[in-house]
Length: 331
Ligand code: TRP
Image (tube, rainbow, N blue to C red):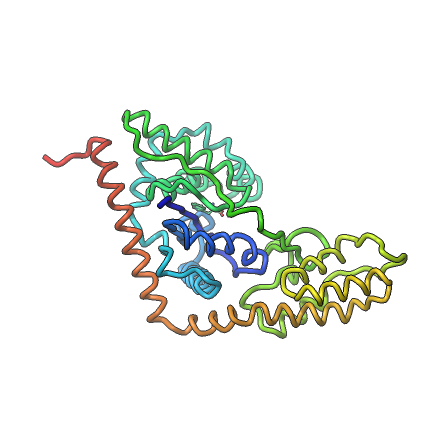
């Protein structure tokens, strides 16, 4: 069975965009691949979180991914810092990662531009740690978004460089992977592009939002003053609401409001009310599970321990072999 690895950023709560995007990939993949999904808490140290924030974020991410459908009996879900073998491989890979190529990485340049006062070495070697995350399990498929394409290319470079240096066909090449092209793009509520947590207050519906919070956000979604001719093309902010409806409402409901729009008889207030209720319904099971798991410290501990054990079993096998290949040998 092919191995899959993906790292989950330990910042921010999951929103509908994450849920209908990357997460659906994970959920499908856990049935067909040997999956390792981990919470990238070591990576988050580049921005110096407080200990309480760090722990709280990791816990929240673990809770939400479990609640949304990652099954710890199928996939190995673990916290990155629970697997010290990753940092050991990171050190080895760093010896053959060059300043020039690290400085040229787009994500590094973006971060330097955004935070010129915090250009630390961890930021520079972020792609090396990410490569270690992936190749420590000899993964070949990595479900990530387009923005991670360059990091994956670097992971292939570092793995291949190791293989060449030690003349050993050891690490396979990992590639970005998306499960079919069935993924839907989830727009935000601000009338512009996609849903995102950094797009401003009210743009995203979080899986942990209360029904009241969902209703309030949808009520405030951006609309226009209504159609002016029959069957006209919808402007983006209106199309966005219909696209959201396509995801959470029934086809009949969607057709109903589409018809009203085309006849110029639509009332956005009604559409929003329906959309909000269908969002509340769609997220209810996840919300219930979030609330149930959040207070189940035993379960969370068990899941994290089981994940760490499984991940370390795989990672320590690699480290044992890598040490041998490098020349760290017993007397
Ligand atoms: N860099 C990824 C992101 O920002 C997170 C990540 C860290 C990751 N290590 C990984 C993703 C390994 C896939 C595989 O989303």
